[in-house]
Amino acid sequence: MYRGDDIYLLDYWPLDNLNTVGAGIYKKQGSVRIEAHIGANRILSAYQYQDFSVPGPYIGAVKVVTLDRQRFISSLKAEYLHFGSTVSWKVKGYGEWHYLPSGTYNALENEEDRLLLPADRGLVLGFQAGAWRDTTFINLFFRYSKGLAAYGEFSTPMGVGFSPDLAPDYTAWNAWDVVGGFSMNLDLGRLGVQAGGYIKWFEDADSESADFDDGVEGVLVVRPYFWIYKGFALGAEFSHQYSDRRGLNPWDDGPAQPRVTKIALIPTWFSGKSTYSRPAIRVFYEMIHLNEDARRLFPPEDVRYGTAVYHVFGVNAEWWFNSSTYR
Image (cartoon, rainbow, N blue to C red; front, side):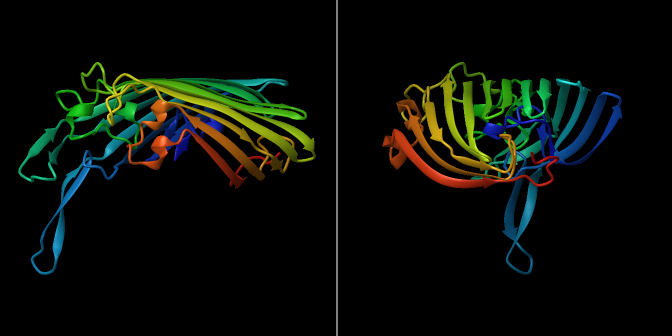
């Protein structure tokens, strides 16, 4: 598990976030730190792995592996950190290279129907800039991904069969995505504010100009807190999520511009005086509104198809293991 900084309120790592069986090295010289990593993963998808049951010679059935493609992923990042007496800052450059070897795909309904999948590749280039003072900080992220990397290391470009999400030569190299995001926190005495968001443009590898898979999506969330007594704070959250797809909704061939808006009240006890103090215990009430296009993403038989407003009550507790600080 190999991670950098996240957008906390979204539980989302927009730049360096890898999970592989692998190893890495790093070198720190003064304010500069360079890290390199190489590893592999393989998800249980017919795009990377297939097996079939055949009659065994003595007992039952035996599984025969017919496709086993591990994805190899390497990464390199260079980070410069400046620790100032008042404000500290950092910049980071980041890159990944993905490689998937060739293999033979067997149609599940007909073992004689085989398709040779060529070797494929992916690329990530990214940048991060951040500044902080104590627990007040801001991070800005930019990420460009191409090929396999545009889908992430735990996703595949396989849709219905292979043709919908792949180029005519059955590769994903034409796919790309661009992500811009930010994460911030303000601790100003009795007032604390957490915020985060991102916007993402994505296009898959096929040649369709009006494709439901392609489009832009984004989210913005702001969570202010006001301390009323020691560790007790009154909190609220406001968020808006949207998506604009370039194709029609596959359920009804209608437009697809879903929107979700949320307003929440979050009374919270913190163990310290920061919005990042942990442990923290929250009681929350959320009111969530889905527009018509968002509801139409459910099949008509689903009870959620006709529900525009949700009310959610709950309690949660949060703490971090191996944290460097609990303020």
